[in-house]
Structures are given as structure tokens and as C-alpha cells.
Length: 275
Image (cartoon, rainbow, N blue to C red; front, side, top):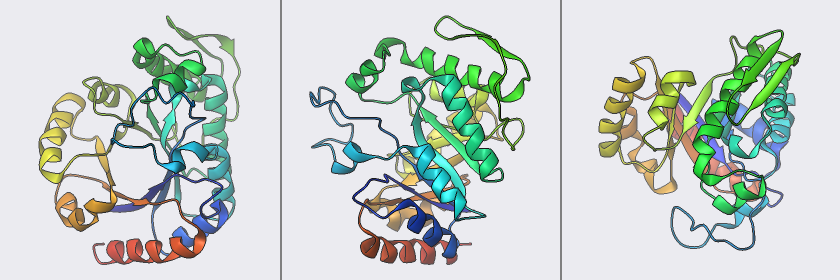
């Protein structure tokens, strides 16, 4: 059973190196980092959870640079994006960043991806929100070509790459695991096509039972599920672990180091009692 941590790393919380060391020392399995390149001041798109947008959204560090710093001081911890906003990223550059992280970490990268929710944020990157799903799929397909072919090319409607060399190649074969976030009708078809599993958030154990059954029907029995536990769901960890899931990711709030350590101690205790 996998026990990891998901968080927003900013300049106001624990530093990446201290966080990575603390997670590995406590025997936790992974670190998944959120991404937002910026938050437009217009704030047109409502926060999906309701209310004001939490402060940590405004200051997220670049996930790949942050995970590279963590990779340098750990040897076992899985290093993931949760989620990388592929619709706001150049696929060639992102393919190189993922492969580089996988190489320097010795094959510990996990690539969590999604289409995003902040419409004005993605518009600033030149992305049409109405076609972001298609763009996500084409960029992921293009990256898979870059990771697995010596001379790679891609010819889609929104993404085109002429025959090119792109190195390094990932250590993990054929490429790092792709975890798909989201809850749209297309999510499970994405997992069936190119994902190792589903990053799920916001569902109760009762709701997740039915959704896992739907996932298996669409994508196959081998696909995995990682559950993001919100703070109020920690008391339900045993209910989630009774389901057909690969593991859970404890939600770590973005707070200074002295406040972070007791929280990690509690996560480690929860994990150790259930292994």
C-alpha cells in the first residue's frame, strides 16, 4: 500500500530540501506537487472548492525544479506532479523536464497530468479553454513519442513536431508513469489510452466505489487509483484502503517547517499502522 503526500510548495512554507529529507526519513513513499504558473488578478473562474482561492495557489514553485532539488537529497522517494498543467506547457520542453527528472532521480519520476480549471490562467498561455481536452491529449501523445523514439515526430491538429532528436530518454520504460487527474467523462478514456491510473480527489469512499467500477469497465482491471485525502478525510483512511486502491496521498498544508514536522509525524504514524 502506497502512502504519499500532496502539497503546494511555496516560498512561505517548508523548503523543498527539508521536506524531501523529512518524508524519506519517516518512510513515506512519495511527494506529489501542485502547479500553477500564475493566478490572473481578474479571478474570473470560481474556485472549484468554493470560497476564496487559498493563498498557496498564488505562490507555487515550479514543480520540476522543486522535485529536482528533492531528488538530490533522497534515494527512495517517488517524485510526482499532481497535477502538471500540460495545457499550459510546451510539450517539447516538458518532455525534456520529465525525462531529466527521471534520469537524475534514478527512475523515480511520476507524471500526474490534467486539463486544469482556471480558464483565464490557461488563456494567458494561448490555450483555448474549449479545446483544452484535445490539446492535453495531443501534447501527451507527442511527449510519449519524444520519450520513446530516437527520431520522434507528431502531426496532430493542435500539436505538430517535425522529425527531431530529443534527449535524455527516461530511465523508466517506456516512460515515467502517467497519472491522470480529473472527473470528466473523458478522464477514464485517457487512462485507458495512456495512463497508469487515476489521481482522484473530492469523492467519498461511497462515491469512489462506483467510480472505480466505471474505471475498470472503461480502462481495464490493471489501472491503479491514488486517492488525494483532504484534511477532513484522514479519519476515513481505513474506508478508502478497503477499496481497490493503490494508496493514498495525505494533504499537507503549506506552512513553515516547525509546523510541518508534526503533521508529517502524524502521516507517518497513520501509514506505519496500516502497512
